[in-house]
Length: 185
Image (cartoon, rainbow, N blue to C red; front, side, top):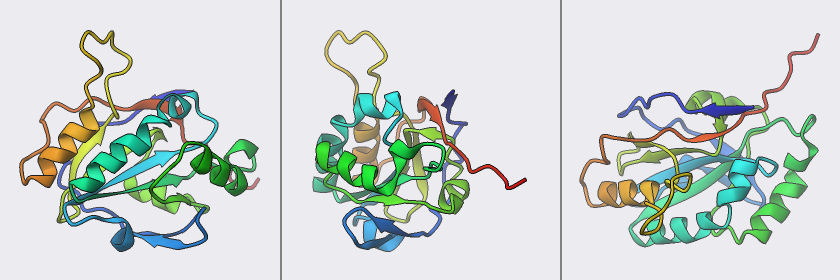
């Protein structure tokens, strides 16, 4: 089922986390951030919306890294019902799409809840003080491009890296709803 992100609560502080990555290391908010900010992405492997942008992510996150913005991707889906989102498949997905940033698993789904993530992909852009400056889509690829697609996340986070505010107009991300664990009956 498709979902859209709610309006952002700009200025909210990034919740902390400590999650296992497909690279065999633990990743935290402190280890993922860059000097000028952080992009937190909620992704999964099976969602067609994520698959449509997966090859753009390394390019965009590398561009932001040069501007002092760190990046991390978090997978919060329940792999019990969605085996394609298992940790092993995450490692293959990251390798196949050449992720140059950590891809971590949120097994308890507590991190997704703390961030208020609702779909995959879901993007949160934080400034150097780790306050939310951007919550929206990666780009406007769903629109008919005349001169190429606007790279909304990259443009917003470059402004943040330079100490300017992200654009006031931010378009909601659209994707597959996060697959929450079912309560035991």
